[in-house]
Image 1 (cartoon, rainbow, N blue to C red):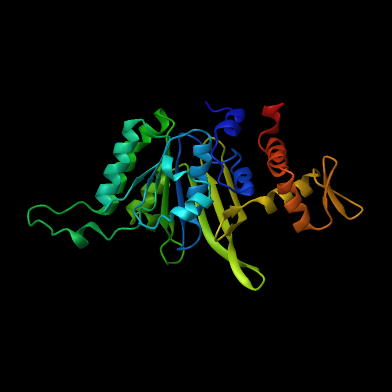
Image 2 (cartoon, rainbow, N blue to C red):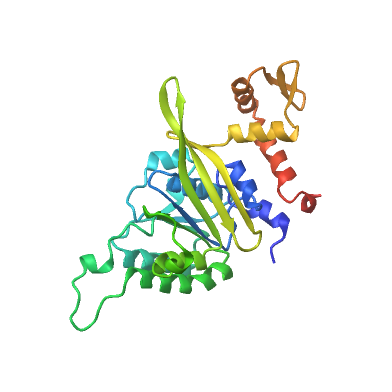
Length: 305
């Protein structure tokens, strides 16, 4: 059974402090399957890359199955990913994607596997000539079978699997209608953490668009149940930026003080404006210290005493 203290030490941070706190576990946990869905450009890949970077910092071995063929190495490095230690696979169809995933999972050599994404492929029958004697399996059936095989591996080997999925451009689907889309139903039933991302407003600087706000809705059914909606920022040439989150939470919790118009943290003067104070936190290497203080306060405080 998981203990609250274990959450803090072994969770893979998402790169967003608000999102980590909303999860109540400090991030994505070993031994769970995660679905990250959203529209095109909503930040699914960026979020996955930050999770990979966090896992690598903990010494974990990671793999990236690039079904979309959209992995940007330069952007991945800015998110903190060490590409030289990341196993990359480039499948050509859904069946191969699932075969690679199952092979990597059963090998026992990996701690985190990302499939980006499960909705990249045309239906199986669109590119395979059907046999008159045997109809090919549908993509929904292939995904459902693969997920059932993976569930015991994930829990037994503390393996984490992230699936990204593009949302369909339709209105809300009632649960009874979801059963008609078996791939989506299989993900819903087999993954314990669901993240739905929506692109929010744009971030501008000096008249130029440099990033966007992302609205994230999360639901976790097991271990530490939670249902929350939060917002975080993605800067296009950097990835998820959490300095503003740390600053705002530091103010809200009383760790950052405003005295005579000057922000201070543990007796260190940071400046008179928000931007100046955030830059000072990074310049004096205090940002990580403040973040850890906030994490200890908000994430299972009683377990850490």
